[in-house]
Length: 215
Image (tube, rainbow, N blue to C red):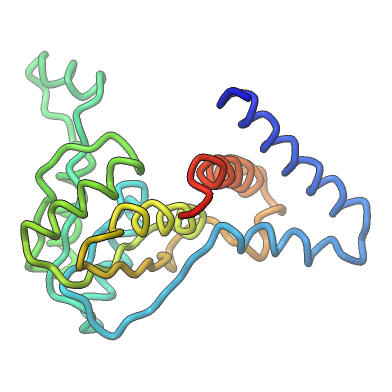
């Protein structure tokens, strides 16, 4: 079975679950809520050496990281450095400043009173890159514990990626779901945006499970 066929089957499974849930009112909310929370991991620690903002967390991750710093969990925050895309390169080629998301996150964190902000220097292009890049950076920095902030809908897959990458390394990883995430696992089916997010992330999660069943 090809990756494309696997993705289509995964999407079909989720669609069938949604159809069944709406067809059987007595169990509708239980099934839909369970499907929403399947995407979510939210762990807590009292302290960590550094807080990492996942690239996909964007503003929700920045706000959560700021709250964690002011709550005394850590004083150090790091963000991933994303490779320039075609649009950004073209703006730069034309001599026009373009607000890349890494720089924007750094500025936002400092504006929120986070003084110790840095960038993980290795360029990444997506979630799969974040795990091994973070593992190498933590080894180089001698970091024992990290708290990774992501959005609710992305947190389960983040957990799998980071735990897989950190195997054999001394650094412990805890995943925190930002309270500012737009995705609501208890009511995601009430909006088109919620349904779209659930289907896309559920598909990505199941595909990750198929590719890495032991993670």
